[in-house]
Image 1 (cartoon, rainbow, N blue to C red):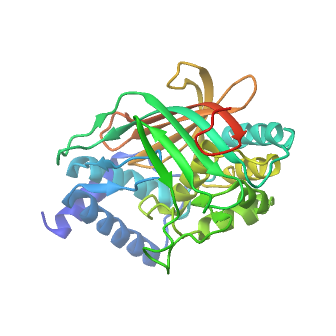
Image 2: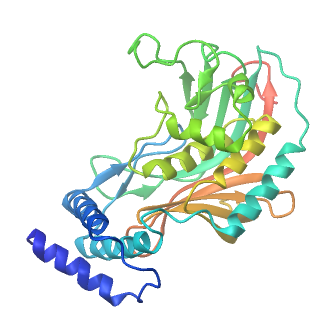
Length: 332
């Protein structure tokens, strides 16, 4: 198919959608948008591409987009960008309201007294889509327990993961690549200690700008775009750490500033607990955060592949326990 034929199909698909109330963009901006969408089409329709391998519990996920599905998504994206003047839509009012309530609850939690020699312990049930043996078809792994110990003060006080019967030391890669390695100390946003979390700014906009700018070890790739990556990074932080109350509140308020965050409503987590969820969604992925509707505590997440027309679950996690312990491997 030639570029002109693809362009004609995009225009024909866009014409099928309801007329937009907003005026047309200037010709120069429309041309830039068209060129951007054509690049997206070529990238997506050519080969299967891996989506980011997220920090720790996240696994490889592949989105296979057929040409027809890509064209439909491109047409919808074109109209959405025109309606918003080329800018992504802000977080929905319902999502902002829920995140504000969650942040207020988080801010009221007592701040624990923790020594530098201790570890954060998080126990959860997880299951993610996996590829094995060179297969291009993902299968969901069985739901299983995951335990992680992360140091309070120094990443060189090696943490530990126990999952699927395997013990994995969380040693920073100081020697392998000195220019990009995580150095001894409080870590970074991709591999934080409790002390690092305590040191983060509590102004939501300042914190979100810091998250947008993060590109160190443990950062996801840029395939989701800056907004999706920011939502993903915050999700990683709240799922497998113990948050200082002020930091937790700031992260939830920062999430409410991310364009594209929406309110999902009532759901259940993978353990069957009722919850209420918000999500960040694009044409390939949807990541949901689930909160207890009574306590507004975070109780898990669910991830979807959105590229096939019908959402397919690609990841589940339910947080069961958080505590501080004296050493890696010790149970509360």
